[in-house]
Length: 228
Image (cartoon, rainbow, N blue to C red):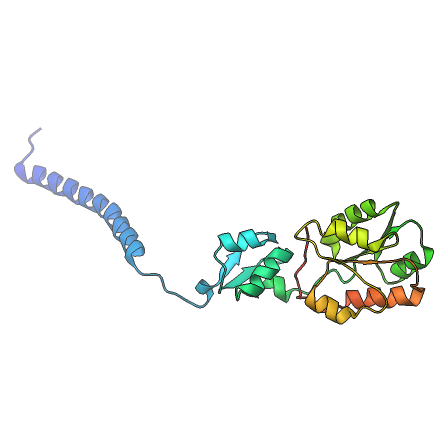
């Protein structure tokens, strides 16, 4: 078979064109990569906020995220501990996002009775609170700690100061002893207790019912829950 020079030339040109077309693909990809890396990021209002994905937001998490002076966006159902709430107040942190827009699903709480008090238990049941009975102050403090994730907790009976003292050993828990003369609005505004402890004596069915309904309607930031 005789192969002339023109035919060989044509083959060489076809091969060169094929090699050239394949070489352009990585070259284009490389150029695009460099462009995406060197192009400055556009700063928008959304990019200045800080999204925190943690379900339990404590002071340590906010410090690690450098949240001071910034807007933080929380996930739906996020929990802010008391230490985290204090950090928010002291460091000009703005809380935004679905965690604030979503109404609180828990409007009542837990009612722990030391011993047996049918009047208080009946009032708690009428108010829609989850009731439980324990035998002493130590068990009441333990039950209250375990119930904090469900909302505010009320303990009734025994020595309320002992229950409050046991609870307040944990720096992330706020427990307060209240009487019928306590200004509930001032207490919830200044202290925002998670647990209120009351003596079983001197409280009528109506007194306890009004107290629990007042606690249910206390002005708390929507979507925030406080736990140990």
